[in-house]
View 1: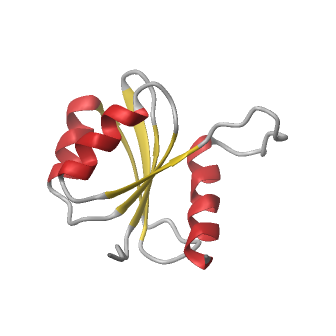
View 2: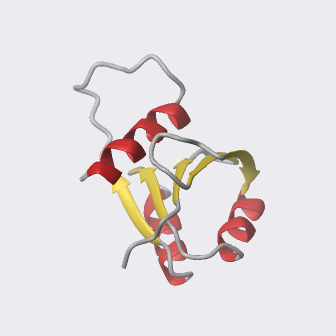
View 3: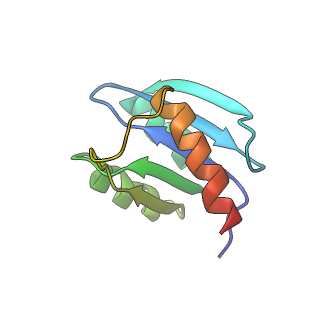
Length: 102
């Protein structure tokens, strides 16, 4: 099932950053959300593809989002790669662009 909207999530302990993309390479919405706000944000959205880096809480959020009909892709963290000069949400936005071309 194809979900036209892609949402990149930067997970943290208490404040999360999200970037919403409806077309490759373009971010149409950015938000900073608390835990409760993030749950409400995804519960009230139509199904989308959600990208997040695999970490301790990614599996929790992944199961929760799948329960609401979202397609969740966990991206492996690999410290062997050279860091990209950008904040996490911009990096995830670049990944969105690449994944949509596949």
